[in-house]
Image (cartoon, rainbow, N blue to C red; front, side):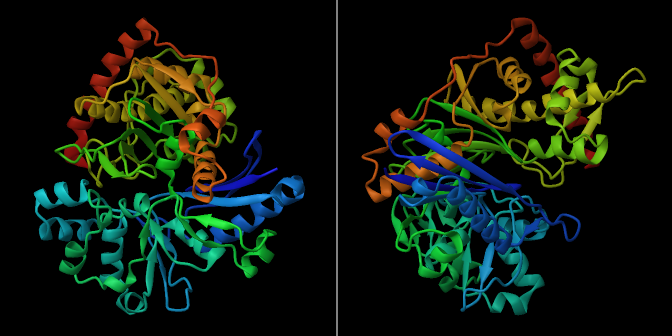
Length: 492
């Protein structure tokens, strides 16, 4: 028996998967944690909470699957993107990590925009800079916490901190680095000219590697804490968007993935570094084959549902929400929801955008509200899907993943709103699976990504077909969705 360990560091939880290289998934464990909001527009997490959760997950997996846990031959990592972890010369955390949801750095974004031409952003970064990306977050620390800034020895992305704790080595991979907005995406290297222009010390940037390269081995200290064997190879891993695509079998062109997590994405694989000429989508380095991933991102998908159910309705049971929403017809009787609780990226790129619920009447109740929020988050994903199609990226079928793949109602909504067939992977934690596969390729335990994908990635026989009448209703509602934003953006 040979096994692989895949760890996915999410925004609301961390997950770990134990994978048998012959039989497939053995077990999955998860641990939830919170996003800290220390002030308005701020979103932070303590990296040591991530590490403690990693230790806990390893302990659970070892307890349940002792023999398989003792046969781990490689460890892969996936993680939330864009965030900023800062450490001093001793490798100690200097402050809580500023994560992708953070909106405090609007002034720094403007500073970057004034210091770079539009052509530079297109040709070097392939992306528009947005609050929550590591670049403006770092400039915010430089301006508002100068003493702390002077102590920074290295910066990392979130999952890199877990790898550092496992191996003692500080490094990053091209997929995560390209999502910092300080990276030359086409050259797969730090954008040194941009970094120097803004006076950022070069020494704080970690060496950058491809995702399947081995970063180091599990140290004796982390082996004791996690119950692992000392010396297990750990690969660099990748951002969660890329890992999730791999875990859904997207290892070549022609497939589109819809993901509903805390945020949401519509993504695809590209052999070349194509990008939207108006920079309304993201193009980052992929974890495989020196390729690229192109996607649209919306910030408050699952976050919208969590806000509604926890803060407004005080409903803890997601199944109850599904049941209530299913009692209302498509279109939510005219209620429209703009899911801009933390600003928005694709397509409007407006950090100041606000959430809006429009169209309530006396006869409406919580059922209408839940369904309208569900429809609103899928409208936001359709914006991204439409942009990819404008770029020439088309598919009649979309693979649904994340929280959107465990609800029949959300799956049918996606089929009807996207006007596409929808299918779902049998393995529910696709980013963990992708991390396992990267570990297998990097260590040589798995021959190649193509054979690994054929072995581990399978799909449900159920295909969700678009309903013509529902499609007609949603087309009209989607027009009103755009009209609502255009009518209210002056007040945001």
